[in-house]
Image (cartoon, rainbow, N blue to C red; front, side):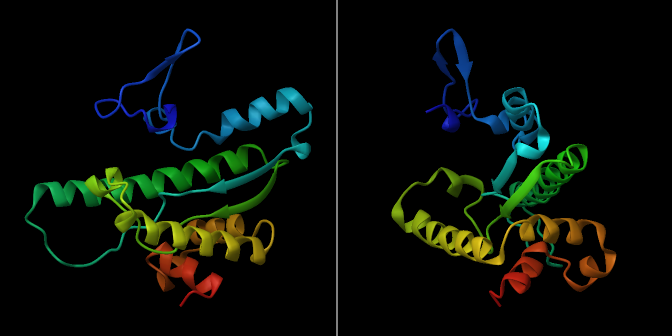
Length: 179
């Protein structure tokens, strides 16, 4: 179970002479390597199709409340950084490999487990997130190919959209009709 192997939480797995651990420890959404590996097989970028289910990219809620709790402030900063880093990585790779067929991109339309609750695997904490994932995936497929990627680009590069929707998740909900 390498994908759950997180340093200081779960030990890396040693398989066939190599250590394996969660991809997020190095580069959380390493689509550049995936594209390169596919190119080695096909020799043609236009034959590569890419779908991304960005399961932890929920845009953090911004509010004007002041927190005097260091851990809470750290977790909020981490969530904000993680969202922007991950989505920026995706868009950078998309610009670097424009010939690739970017089909489906989706992410949670609502709050996901965060902080220590990410390590809580009881139905009481995971069922709601699983249901949301099914609904979001269905809406993404119904919206059609490239819709999610276009939405992500529009949000990142169009200042009017950002002004109207300071929180990407609100924009996501509006575009998919979840309001």
